[in-house]
Image (cartoon, rainbow, N blue to C red; front, side, top):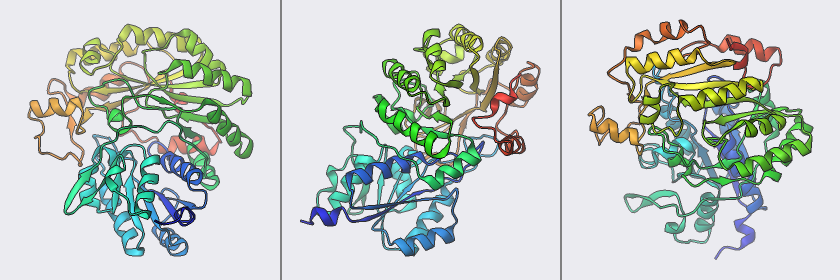
Length: 458
């Protein structure tokens, strides 16, 4: 048995391998939650962060040589750009990162993150780390390290992917972590505040809904776990007082679930008198004017709605728990309360026809104080209902891995007409291939903070 003192004196390097910065770079929240937890759970250990958004391979190599970590955890945020016009895959870069890591040290390499969690077996086979972790990583990574250091049984570590003999083994996950800790790295905070104009933070994990294309239930599970509202407010206070940060975005899959918690969080934000603006992802279920009024009092200025369609027929087929008239009602409240809101739509996906597209474009004209961000088609991910539909319709084969992006595009629509039809509505539509980089850069140079799409509203 290895002593607790030795177990807690290890060096752990946590790496964000994400370099996707469209429409703006996103703070590496996953490794920040991990580092906060590990510093608390193993107080004698040294936890170091490295971000490929801000650092080069040369800097990475130097850090490995100088720190000589016992463990290197590498987080894979995205598999590709989810843009049908480009279809840029990130897997080749991830292979390079892990091969480079392997060639520069003898550390134990553990891969995780949301991207890995969708394809744990295939990516484990391709990337060849020592271990992988799917889903949330706090307890699994801690359990893995403790098990290695005590020569314990790897089968006891939930969410672990590893070789047992020559066979890849995937341990089931029977529970979820309920008390995540979060602290922000000062150097990374400075970079993302300057380049993104916001910091991101979670208030809850898990999603109870069943949208046919969505991977959130695969990554986080259906069971919703809320974080400590007092701890969230303390973190925000620190960001405001130490860094002057006055805008954050809550990255929950959907913010307006567990509204008892949301009201408590809002009350605490109001009591703290932070004067901090914020936004989040919402849908049109479990929301009313009272909630919006409370959230606005607590600092809410921007909502990004996962609307998908403005046709009831498509909403039903996509598994959405709301319909068009609910959308119109809630958006009218937002307009009255001067809360800017954007709609993320899917055009040409499952169930779409020329008639439902006409309905969406026509209904978009009824909405005010808003901007539309359409995706074209639906990215097909394994484990989703859309994947089953695509197999049944012979769009993909059951044996297809789908690591390279494949999209479900309805055969009943003409994709080439979408931009012209959107323009004819007179509203602001931002398609995935529209280049907004220069516009966003100019706003950032003027020290504009927040998501910036409110400046594009028509």
